[in-house]
Structures are given as structure tokens and as C-alpha cells.
Length: 199
Image (tube, rainbow, N blue to C red; front, side):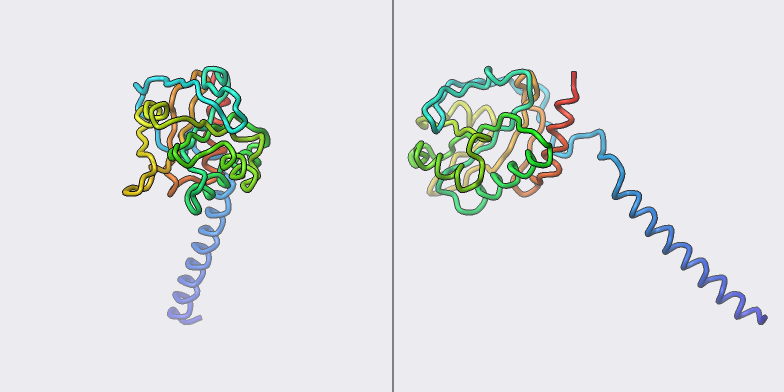
């Protein structure tokens, strides 16, 4: 067999082996267990616990202190939103479905002038989140302290609200944050499960 032909076959064989190895590495990588790190961004370690005593869309008291012992999803939405907020709500709903069980989810109003109990109930119904998410409603004065504690810009005529979803651990400490642009059901479910495994 001519040397050129042998060299060509050898190079072709190497390329084929490299391609097969690449496919195998990709396939194995797809099945690996997610990283031990959080998928979302770590919140600063000195964030104070911030509780509140507000009313939800049913008129019932909603307090974070009552949810201690389990991770809690806190998100910031407004009821008349037609883009980011419904998308965020769906990401959370799918994450709970993927997780296989519910954890407390609180949507904090960022548009108190328009976020009425009736509109909050309609939003939850539209998003398939009745009984799975509660809406913390109140006046701008009541909500201001929460917005500051979580670094949230409320909705206004001049500015779009901060579209953020935050995970609290069992102690009520802010641990993980997701901007709407990076929130995915898989990442949220992963981080909730990681917090649940903590002792």
C-alpha cells in the first residue's frame, strides 16, 4: 500500500475517532449531575431577614415568618403586566412541576395602585397558579420597605420594575437570585432542591 494512502487512512481514522469521542463526551455531559453550586446568583451573605405582614389576594395574612422551615420563592410582579410577569410565573409553575412538589411562592406587588385582589386572583387563574402562589398586596408605603430590602425598583410610568426572583432558605435568609433574563424552570428547581437538602 502506498505511503500516501496509508497516511490518508491514518488521518481519516484519527478524525473519525475524535468525532466519536466528541459525541460520547457530549452525551455523557448531558447526563451528569448538576454542579454542586447554585444555578442562580448567590445573594450577599449579610442580607438581613425581612419579614412582612401583608394581605394576599384572598384577604388572608401572609407572613414570611410563617413559612420558616422550607425554602420560599419570592418574586416581584404586577397584575397588569403582559410580558415579563406571565413568563416569570410560568417559569415558576414549571419549576414546581419539575420539582414534583410545591414550596411556598410569594409574588410581591410592584404596582400597588393597580394590583387589586381581584386582578391578582385573575392573574393566578390565568397562569394556572391558584393555590400555588400567593400575592402580597399593600400600599406603596407598606411595600417600600420590602422593595428596598430586596433591591427592587417598583413599576412606574418612567421605569420598568426590577424583574427578580429570589430564593430564601429554611431560615428565611436570601440565598439565590435570578434576573428574569436568566430564570429557567430547571435552574430554579435545581436550586430549590439544593436548599431543601441543606440541614
